[in-house]
Image (cartoon, rainbow, N blue to C red; front, side, top):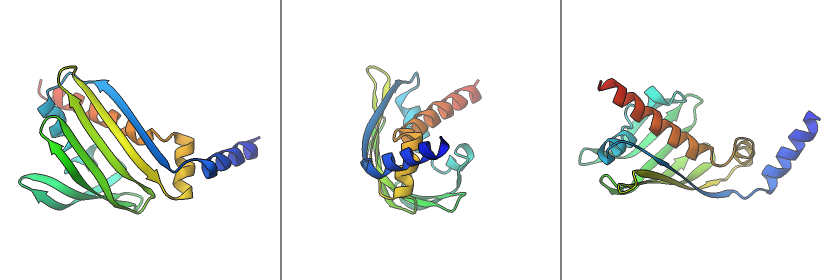
Length: 162
């Protein structure tokens, strides 16, 4: 039975589309400035994303990091850069290079009128291994991790201020 499940997963991964486009939306009871400050707090990312060993800043524009490399504890490395930024409203970043096989673009958009955050992902899993992994865990796993991390970090920061 286990062999059948494994073979079925491999077949699904082999035949699945390598491209993915998805979005999550959720309400946040925080100021737009607090939300985008948290998203851009890359230097502290290894403290709350345990799979990341370090962040290497590649470039800055003004006082903001504009491109960076994430070094993961399992020796994967991924480089990203911001491609669009509208303060307190929109932030877009994309993969420059990846040793894993997931490349894409992620957009954070905050609607102040409804206090709703939208996170959109357009990505490609271009290796069979990662197509298989995302078949098992779901292609929306990265989106869900981004949402969960943002909510958790904002919650921790608000508790620290009391």
